[in-house]
Image (tube, rainbow, N blue to C red; front, side, top):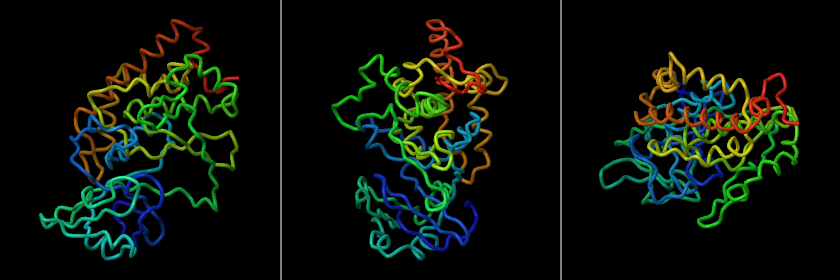
Length: 325
């Protein structure tokens, strides 16, 4: 994805912000463009559902997912494109209509989408060079069908309303009665997802997907992390709600967090090394690395508090059990 020639470009349908489907001779990639510098944080008056997506978050999330031992995220790499030769000259006609030259002489485009697809929020090159993230496509749904699930800890996506889990202290008991969370691995998988999302500050987890062919004996795919890594100086504790309310975590996940906490290699060091050879390195602004190690301590303290309140065997689940029934 980082080096092969791109042969055709179309805008990817769906979602709230602009994404491009890049076609190679024998594969496809999902392109999310760079919108602003790495040190720009989430705007303080932006809700999580109107935050800009960051290409660097997609890259870092893939590496973080792998370091945590989950391996449920599609491979993502950075790449620097020439907008003229690698997008404009091979783009679909509808996308071409949104290209223009800015007053500064840069090549820009905005596509068509629900948010920020207008001239005022255009994506611009410098003058026609642009960074982005390239995510590998999953197999076509006609070959490998997937099922979309509403995340039980989904946020309200409303300016004033709260979701049920935000005001119901016994919410986890309700979730445990609903298939597929009443038995098997799925609820523990969501604990893993909560750890991943908390470490990168991702509040935008409304749905997730699984492969249909495996029924409920499969893991959730970790997809769409563009709204992560936006607030390095703020830890959004509500992302840990599944763990805080259910008081459960996999032994393997806890062991991984303890390994990075105790050293000799911290999670931030491991992530920095993992991303060092990415074509757009350095991928993250330095404060995000500091936040990672701080958040590892927050997760471990949450588990420690659970163990102090509950029977530790009910909190930490061995992989051979991998069940909540």
